[in-house]
Image 1 (spheres, rainbow, N blue to C red):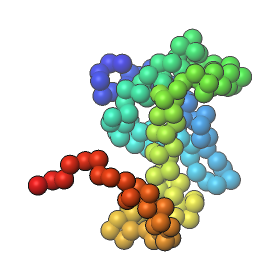
Image 2: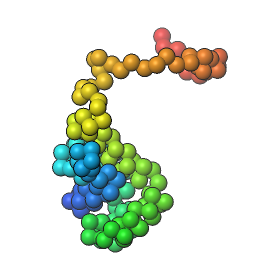
Image 3: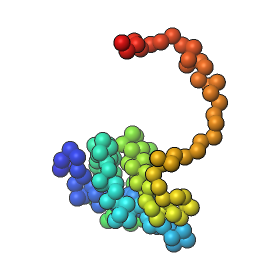
Length: 149
């Protein structure tokens, strides 16, 4: 990794490749894949605290592939992906989460899902009333933190 808060060029290329593997474009739904430049830009701009784990996942992918992921044929790429899922651990889970969260906040994707293009607040989303009695065992426990003065 070149800096603590940035991915190297090779890591960015592998991120684009693996993102396309996770979510390819769909003509049927008229949505881009997760390798779309705008979605990739969002990923890179918002990695923040996940940068180190994503970089670790991409480095693991590179070791498994033995060369840039994009240079592998589909069969070899899929074999690397299977091995990565089995051995990637928390870093792999973080990589997948980053791809999914950035993809599903893209306006084109939200539009294709029939969702209103807006932040959750200030309008808010209406949630169904839950079963508040599920919290009774927690409320019944003795306090474990000291009270503020």
